Image (tube, rainbow, N blue to C red):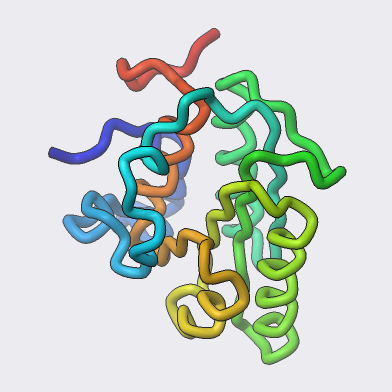
Length: 173
């Protein structure tokens, strides 16, 4: 079955009648991301003993990326997670861009910097660079979980599990 997540409510980009801009939870996105490295396949990695309490979000790119990361920030705050920039994060979410070669380089640098600043953190990488060049991002941090653009619903579901939100799919008030 599809993971229970808030993707439809959090990523509501339905700006036109034909649905352009909508992030769809396709069959592929409801399954495990095809870019997930096998090192992250243990049951202990999927079900942490304690929920994440400190997180960092690093974002490059367009207004869509900014909107998506604001949705991730809302989800994290709803789970009681403190957003930090001091290297004490237990979760780092990096949203990448690939519109120019400089953006590609900055995306790889962000992934490397996330691991250096937070060596014990779980690093989730998403965005256009994951679609275009997952190998170089995987080389930048072999332990990072990569989520392509069609796996945004899975990214949110993973974050929901990590922060310990209730399984009813509703945000706490």
